[in-house]
Image (cartoon, rainbow, N blue to C red; front, side, top):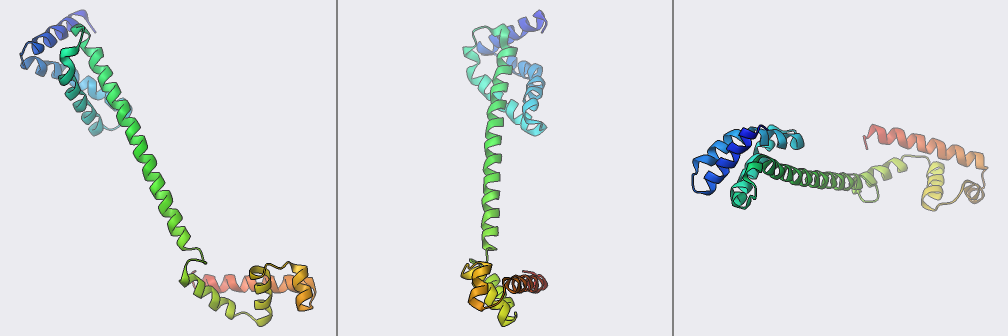
Length: 185
């Protein structure tokens, strides 16, 4: 900034501190646009940048009597805007993280409701679909999924070959897929 502008800023700050309120209006006219641009660099939103600049002006008004070197008003004011912008950015980031956390929890809750062990409607559809299978297929499904037997164990229990167990299990699954897809489970 030109030395004459710094001197003028210094004079305006001194005048304001001595009770001339119009001096602040001149400072605002000179610096508000620059403050908004500085805030925009962090927010990428004109409205938010204006709010940040406005908030910075409030702080400037409260602390202008503490400025040690009035000819450094510009850099002092820009540092306040920068701090306010960084604070806004951090707060905004935390809010976004919270929103993502809420969305994630909501998604988990909804998907959790789709779990067959917790959703009675899905459980009932699955029971009806299994009931529509042949008795041999139902036995194989029960032993494999509910009782947690392996293929060889099932073949020994039912006195059939392991190939037959695999075949019944495969066709039972395929039939269930078809039934459940038709019911739009």
